[in-house]
Length: 312
Image 1: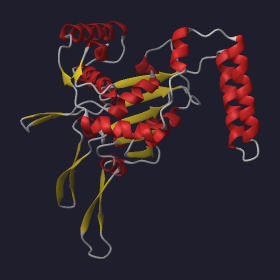
Image 2 (image 1 turned 135 degrees about the vertical axis):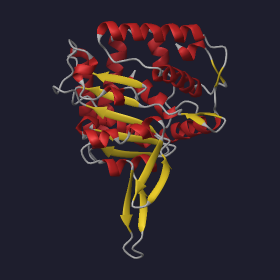
Image 3 (image 1 turned 90 degrees about the horizontal axis):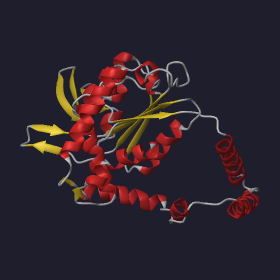
């Protein structure tokens, strides 16, 4: 589910403009929160390599000026100049923020406008202007107690206000659950990756991985559905980047023949559950989030219209 959320954010929805007066963003913001050591930073690093334009920063080393814009004096002309921050440099791309919970409250509130209106208003040193920040924000954060506690709600696990949580379209939770079989696979994968990266041990690692694959195929019984998925050819990284760029620039799916009652019913049920269980407050923004994710799913398949499968 986390990989699907990152893929939806990389593809993005469709931007909408109403008579050049009102604009609705099409970028999908994702927050990945969970236990340490689960590879949250690796998710961000992979998204940085896959996206055609990406800016990576950390919450501890990023300030409000570094994320939005800064006004500095030119040493030669002695005039005030405007320099864009990470959100401005990531225009039409993705801005990746690691250690999002380590940011100061003042620095975090400075990106409210950039995450929803996707613009940054500047009024410093006699310079009054507005910069474009049309980018998706993918952030990673750790829980308050270090590890995610499933006995309490999501709001009690994360030290973020409702105003910033409502601007994220998708919230993902990563948990480090003890599983013997999964732990064995992870340990074998880490050992093999270290052996392959060594200049003298690559041939031995390939022989070891091939022997393990043969033994697994002979001893395990694999389901037909999972077997067909595993046999699908893998997409090359460069080909995936070209596919992403082509889908973002050319494919603009329209909302046609979708079940509006299903979305309205889901929204009412989410609001009822959030009030009764004390979870994340559900606002009207989340209806737009559902539509954006359905449009991004249609972009993956290069469809011209959004159907019921994309809504599901």
